[in-house]
Length: 164
Image: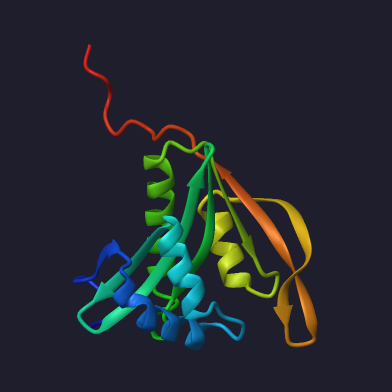
């Protein structure tokens, strides 16, 4: 399978049986990663947890919490061998679509300042920096701040003129 195109990939809700595979990708992608228990807890509390999979296995996944008119992207990850080919953008689009389905007005996320590729993706997709959370993430030499970003969910643009 071509990781760049992943034409046979599809999204589906994450299931408890996916947790080991999701956690394995998480460990390969991040130095400081979520434990399997965190993913299990996300499923138990009813967060929207989705996986993107292809013939070769798990490509990526995302977790978003939707409540009180707001959505918060808690985790978005693409397997290292699939990074740099637009898969993160696909997962982000899915999470934003889920937020729209829940009729939220805005989407929030945190990102490490040391992750310029993710920051660029979020800016490109309409997120703006709205603040910082000091010492939010564990880091090799102590703690790292989080950039807090948000995007207002405006109604989608019509694809064709309305019929009169």
